[in-house]
Image (tube, rainbow, N blue to C red):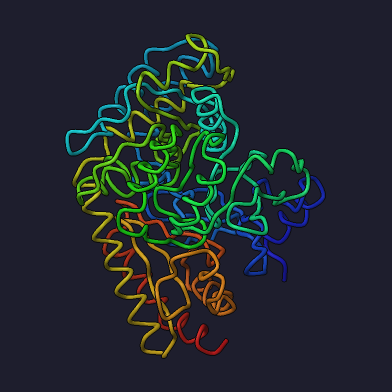
Length: 438
């Protein structure tokens, strides 16, 4: 018998392409009917049929503190009472930019002096690339296979036929000429990066890389990889764009960059992009860097970027509240919760003889049905991905909401208390059996 989720999905497909406004929500890789969520609080979400789930999506990262944290909600309500949007500067924008600049420092390094607020991660990375091209006067870009940087045309390029071959369109609607401004090289392959620079270094504006890949499953960056990318780029007069839309303020108080510097990798990216946690669940993203780079942006520089809703006061209020509440104790709690889930997940799968690995960076982790940690997109694609569908649906039936793709990260929050963690642990043995039987 159809429930409210089925009814809503049927209606949605009549008025929304595919029934969703972002593709992964359609359950395309796991099948079945997406859960239409009606509310969320703390570690839990409730669907349109009234069923409650322990949530491991956390709005794809932003809910670091847990859903609907009362202080964040109050900050947004107070801001809304003063006006929803002004299209003018506000004091809150300045305060949030200062918070970001103050947090992103480690080991005596401070790569962010100025911040430009935008509305989405896609907008942040798109602007970062335009800015890098404006600073260098060059056109070409180097990116990595399996890294996702939003859906702007030049970042949806697919690998060409060789290491130093310019890319092809990765989706319909992207002109070949736009894709051909990008080199797509295997993640982790520094020799491929060097080959691209050897062939076209004087024309390359920037390298863009996820600080820690989390869109081909979580992949732990090779030791020194990001630092070496900075060295290669800078030696050729190019910039390094570090994409922390997902990892920024999620894996560490100073993001993945801060985590790496604390581990001894002393490097500075030229531009860092932020999203997700920076907006506390509201539409907000940003890019930041040294003043000498950032002031190429209009109105002081020649690189144009604008947005009516950039720095929206409600989003800014949520971001300020979230970052101010994201204390060391919060990160310690999320880290401990992640360890608890990882241990229970591995134990359940091991008990059923299912080959698996659980890559982790900071508080972020993912599952791969592979007997070793994948180091590239090509390797991630060799796993027994078919095991995830029964695993996912078993967890869902037991009241645990997972990301609906094997290639997505799992997200915990500071609100995942002992009761929520116990519910996850209780659901895992049956899900492991389902994966084993696939």
